[in-house]
Every structure is written in structure tokens, then in C-alpha cells.
Length: 445
View 1 (cartoon, rainbow, N blue to C red):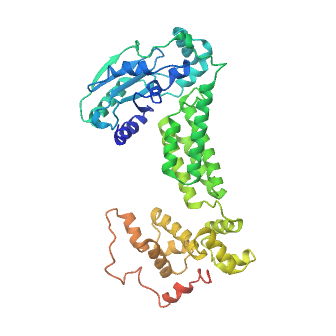
View 2 (cartoon, one colour):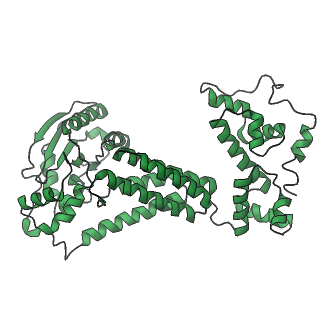
């Protein structure tokens, strides 16, 4: 199935918490037909018969809606041959879902009805708690049909099977002895922890694309519920992710003040979200936010002195900073400190100070209506002309022009027709200021 088509289904149905999987006639993918439920309950369960059962019913633009003996519902539809580069027929598996949350008592009744031992209660009930509970299943059915017809450009026909008679044949003599054989539990836990570690490694590296990929894989794991209420369970997951991200960016060398500020803001947002979908969206925003924090403020691999200098600049950029100032602070020569800073950061101390100040200027230009003079002063530039020249050198346009771009989305930057405009007019000593302005004097030898 083409990645774009799968992405459309995935994004549309993730709103209601449904998982979407493409299944081919391969053993590694077949357990996705039922969310790995029967592989959890039964020893050596084979999904081959179930796949053959579905193949006979989902051909020719058909979607089937099935309900199984565990009160779960599934949707399966055929993927058109032109939508896949595989020689095997592909089935799009959507679900499972439940029409309402299952209590422990209801779960026990389901086990008894299916002649399964009560010792499977905890596993089955935790499995239910990972699934979406959707009361209006008919609306979901219509949504999937609409998506399938639109994405694949052909009408899809629905066939309902009230019960999965013969779809998932099992041998009840192979019921898993869960207290004696927990290999599947170990495997699930190991897989989850491995994905969490890869997610945190990507966040620690500031790699958002990789982090988003690992987060998507983690969401498809069957994570046992920690609370009976699904909203409470997701809130618990979000709190855990916030804590894990904090440690990941701390290892990356981000200053604790930045970490505390961001994690506090996310903690506040967690308390405000009122649905599972909102919490899921917040988790994605959290991953992006911590990756950005690493890219902007990570100091992993820097010496203690360079870390202290960077942190000091971050929080005191408005002050008069210079190479001489830091050399005196650490009681070392300007030449040695300059070489040390350049070697570790790849930038001169002068340029680094400008980078910090100009990043702050960008934030103010984006989020405020302050005058250019006020923004220059707030960013540590006492000479407006020097600030303009540094800004233009860094971003290719003047602060005023950048501000107009932000305020007028239709504005396209062109070379200024009037070079005598306000932001270009320089004071008599502007040339001298560029070389020796009040806040940048002797930054580098």
C-alpha cells in the first residue's frame, strides 16, 4: 500500500484512537489482524487460517465489519492492486475497538463464556484498556467507507458479519499457561522499553523526525493500562513521557533552568487536557518541544568552562559581554579562552553572543509590536545601526522588513528601493560602531 494512502487513513482514524495496519500473507504481519489478542491468549496460535478466511471475503472492493467472541469489532478492506508494489494481496486491518469500556466483571464473564480460565483475566482486561471505546460504531463504519472510496477512487461495499464464525479457529487445549510461561509478556515489555530508549535517544539528539517515528511505533504497542478510566491512564502516560523527556535533554546538556521551564509548561497543559485525543496531541507536541530545546540549548561534550560561558550568555545576553569579561571571570588569557571556545563550539565567542541575541530578537519580532529600537536594547545592542547591520548579515533582511513579513503574510522581500529608509540611515560614527560598539568591544583578539 502506498505510504501516502496509509498516512491518510492513519491520521483520520487516529482521531478516534483506531489503529490501522496493512497485512500481507506473512507470519510477521498476520497477528495484526486482531491486535495480537489471540497470540496473547493461546500458545502457538496460527493466523494463517484467519487470513485465508478474510481473503475470501474482502476481494472486489469489499469491506467487511466483523464482531468476535470477545465483544470486539474489526474492519477489513482490500487494497487495490495498483496501490501496492507487493505481489501479495494486501488487507487493510482497522481495529480492534469496543463499543464501551469493559469492567473486570464483564471481562471475567467473557472468559467464562469462551471456556477460558480465570487466570487470563488480568491480561485480557488490560488488553481492553488499550483499545478505544466508541459508542457510535455505525458512524465509524461510514467514515471508513468514505475514506476508502475517496483514497482509492472506487466505491466500496459493506458486508457485516455479526460473529466471526470460523474466522479465528483455535484449539482450546492450547490455552496459555500464563503463570508458568510469560515469554510473550517479556517480549512485549522488552519491545516497549527498546522503543522508549530509541525515542529518548532521538530526543536527546534533537532529531524530531526519528523521534516521531519511534513515538508512532510505541503507540502501536499494547501498553497495559495503569488506571481503569482511559483518560486517567493516558494522563498517566503523558506525565511519564514528560519526565522521561526531561532526563533525555538533561543528558544532552541542556541547562536545568530551560528544562524546568518547559516541563512545567507541559505539566500545566497535561492538567488542562480533557480527552484522550488531546493528550495524544500534547504528547506529540511534547516530543517536538524537547527536540527543539536540544537543538537550541544542548551542551553535551563541552568542557565545564564553556558550559558556564554558554549558560551565562543565555541568561545575561542584555549585559555588556566581551572576551575580556569572561577571561577575567575564569582567570585565564583571552587567547586561550578564545581558542578553547572556538574549538568546542565551532564559533567565535563574538559570533556566539550575536547568535543568542539575534535569536532573542527574532522571538520579540514574532511575538510583540515593540519598536526596532526597543528590541535592539532588549537584546543587548545599544547601537541601533549596529543591530540592524548584524541582523541583516544573519538573516538577509533588516529587522523592519522581517517584522513586515511577519505582520503581512503576503509580503515578499525584495531589495529595498529606498536605501535611505529609516532602518538604513546610519549615524556618523556607524562605521566605527561596527568595529567597536559599546557592547561588543574587544570580544575577540
